[in-house]
Image (cartoon, rainbow, N blue to C red):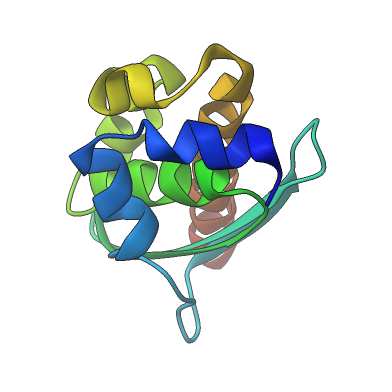
Length: 135
């Protein structure tokens, strides 16, 4: 861990540390309705799997590959989308992630929130495409 990262982590708050240390949505789903893996501008990646029942995101899991900020943003986005309608999940914005994390998401890591939100959108899009293809 770089000195910059160690200093940043020392300053983090309770919500950030909770999601960093005990991510609720870590893992993958067997036979997801939709799945996406995107790589961000920094080289970090997130994979998100969703199962949709009716119009509700019934299950969601994510596998981050990158820094702690990417992991936390992936978990927060998953929490925001879990048990929401597809339309509600598609309205999630990176700024909502930033609002939840407050000052714990530095501006130079806002791209992690964008990566998580965009990956969620792609996973939902795949699920909707598959559903339309079988209808």
